[in-house]
Image (cartoon, rainbow, N blue to C red; front, side):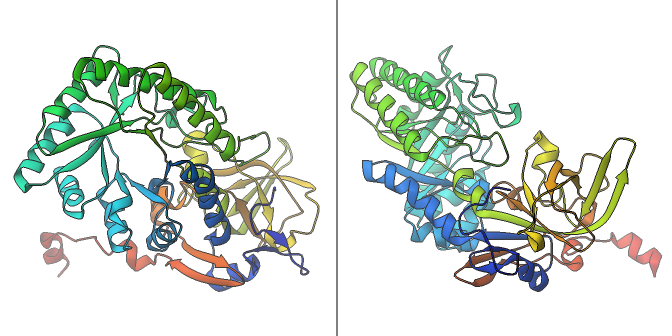
Length: 440
């Protein structure tokens, strides 16, 4: 397993993160356990700020990658913006005292209640996804005497080379207004005609876990080409260009992600060239990293339970006390990870096993053919680069409680998400009155 951030092997032969022994973390906080490396999370924020913020760009963390009150405070302290995609994420930002002047609200089907919440909170930008939403937003601003600064999300017709489930920039997508056929241009016209709505710029997002930079440059060229058309047709001039997130990270062997510096050079170069070619002022550039900030900073700890060997295949299944409930990504779209034994981190990986989850599904496999030292029940497995889209996508399938999360730094481990209890699982359950009467 490749180490990231503050990971190292301590004199006891254990994996440490943030100067905290992960074997001790597993003992104190139990497993499964999400461990977030605060120093690495902050450094990833700062890396984006160094190459985008210093050139006048905006860095907006994609909250869907992973969000809670503690993360809100870290983002606020690092002067990073926040992209939310639901009322729940917005509520978390409000309760976390995150500056509303740095909040962007995405989503292809925002409800009236969510948009009202956004207007009342006074967030920075609402990213309008379709014409129905634009009409709804216009009604709400009129009802409340409010004003909304918006970006229009467009589908640029670019298919990034990633899994189809996390590919979002193609024309055939539930997200965004389509440029061919005039739908996007109609969005500009209606925005300009809607009282209480101020169109500031354009947005697109081409996908996730992307290792090639040319699609970002092409997206900038497409959107600025459309911006020129929009100015010719309506007189509107673009002020802001948000090119979304999606930069890939290293998760397992074979992954070769580009640097944040290379991403910035590609985007700023393409934007400047396209704006000059189309006779447009260079817009303010925004990006929305999520995975590339949170992903490498997260590690999930598990305890080994049963071990099943099938000599005829051959294969050895090593079952852990978590799985698709705390990390559904391998089951959903074949996401790949690496692992080590946290209590044997100083030993050479000389055994090939398949790490299985405990959900009642054959597809609940965390890692096929993982290389680790000889394993036995009670060992602690550490799966790296799980800081993004694990906690945020976790669920209660089979009625397993969600894990806890700890923030580690300088030898201190602080609980930032409590482990769910069995009582939490039935907290919202209600037995109908007629059944209660029959039961006496």
